[in-house]
Length: 153
Image 1 (cartoon, rainbow, N blue to C red):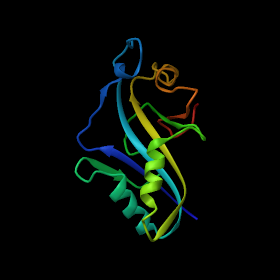
Image 2: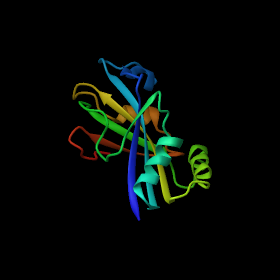
Image 3: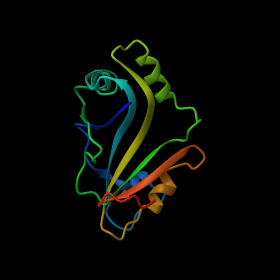
């Protein structure tokens, strides 16, 4: 069984004002950038898995894809990865898996979809407020990773 991680980032998107993510205004200027991460465990050839990602999960015109476990964005303070809890209805995941049924050359063993939000700020800004306002504990699981690559929540 092999694994591949694909982080998809919009070519035409840039850092935005992080006040869009929270319910009450922040006290300091904070920027954010959003990406999507697809983690596949599969059996078969890597080239077929990458072809599937490129064909089904990436818009060639508007997106870039990075096949690495390293973050696609640099110089962030921390990032939040969040996705649906196991067992929760995930329509995007179901659509991806159903579109794969006709694909040959590899089989998806498991698929994990994650929304990643990079936060660019001074060290006084912590992740707690963003997690509280972005992630819904009833349906989401999440983790927070600092700029040193350490999981902090």
